[in-house]
Length: 303
Image (cartoon, rainbow, N blue to C red; front, side):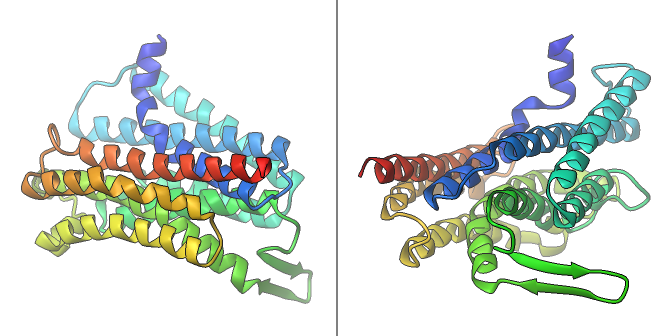
């Protein structure tokens, strides 16, 4: 039963949200933010369950279109989606109740795009936006919400809302710091989607699914490599601007196996043999940054 459920929601793919969560926790600890652990755990549970929900919806719709067999009967599979969606939505609303309208709006946008990524008359997954959307919501929105609930009110933005006035004030430096930090999870997450679409481009065209590689052709491979280099550049810049500890430069050494994997994928783009390179590179880059940041946290506390 559990094996069928884990297969349905593809539990192995949840490293994208989980590692981004851990990377952001490490960043907050290094910045010596006073952690709101109760809100943080509520956010993690809601985030994780909704990640499961979007995967379940994706599999439910895809198997309906291509006649593949689900791990469960279609009625049971649909009930699982409703249950996951209901629990994750409830947790999101509770977190918004504990915080403010910014979290409600950010969470609502995440839910909206998560559902319509696969579902609807014009799913996002069938458009050349999959890489940007997945990179943005995993790489930017997860860190933003997590940082927002764990930093003092007004750190990122302040708003005023009444019957006569709607005003929003954005703090430029914290937002730019967030965006620079988010380059790492954005780039490596987008590359998983890009590698998947590169490998499937011929099959996708046959079912009228026109993803980014369909439009940019051979330029998809330089983009694949360039996104990884962007992640390393972001780490270097954060050390230069003293956002991260110089110890974070240790993560740069992961470029050795990552570059080797880029060369392999450049020569052959095949779902069954080389697609996993994007996942391996994700783990290498994210894992290297997480270890370096947490090492910085430990040494900072000791010294």
